[in-house]
Image (cartoon, rainbow over all chains, first blue to last red; front, side, top):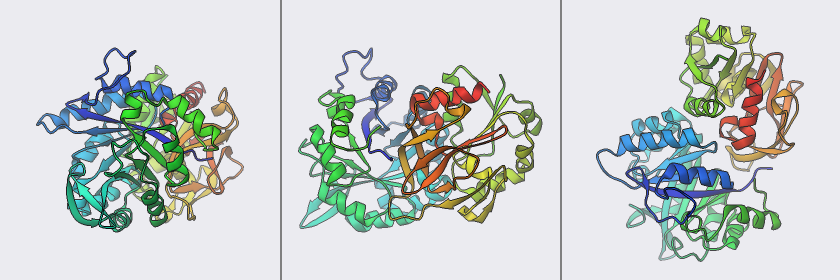
Length: 250
Length: 192
């Protein structure tokens, strides 16, 4: 049976993890490779690396990091953050990334999704969507959720999939950071709207939130950062909990 | 040991290389007939679209070479699909090593079938791997089960997750991305 996936997300700046992590047994908590290895060993099903650096050296640093991660871990991983060109994606995949996620650049120029899907296949193109609920509508936002657009969530999701997104990563800006649970109503509607897997993001605080997003939100995967980094939730325990509640996990 | 990964611009090669490195094996990339023929083990990877990949193979004559190989050959994902007789993707004729067809998932469930699913495997590739271990898959097309099937997987219908015939092997899943059980499967292949 196909399992639900648990995905820790690591924020990267200049080749280092930025959000504080609380892995006491790590030699270097800022080393993304060591952290990735740790998560892989604990049973994470996939990893997402979000590069938030903007320096000139970014491309080179990120390529090296991707290579180091690919060398070290034996589970799939996605790389995102500031990707706007077909060549960027080629470079990341050539260094061992399994998928790339694009966000603002896809909203600004939707043709990018089509170009990437055609060149590399839909299976490695994740379209990340940040949205906020405003005046009874889910409105797509850019730049980490700061800038509103004219786009509505469900329309944009449909177009993204039509253009070749193989997976959607949906973050509710209203839920992100609240630790009150995922945006399950919107997630469920999203899963009814499009036919690709949906990764739920934003709002994880307790183990029951993961259960809810799989059952009520119909998410294929759930992503979280701080609850894992700060060890508020441990992946082996989370998987045991989900298994006890009849969710198929690895 | 002299492992060659068939290089025809099919992506995903770096991950396979690293997975082999973790097992202490080095692999070279090649599209040169002589180098491939002289390998002890050949890995035939593949990610992307079938008709495009087949064109690339034909352009270098690899489509004729691969079926004549006598050492252990492992096709992964699209590589395995191209070893079948035909795939619906781009209406593409395959290498006809495995006597089965590749068709598209036709379901209201999510396509691609993406993530970790259980595989019931038999034979040398699965030696020492617990039954119903989870392997990582990403695919929209699947091989119909036939007498070459050595690994069974079920999405909404059963499909061939692994095939074997003589010296030829194929996995729909990515052993290089399937954690410890994937590493074990690769190790089993290298031990052939």
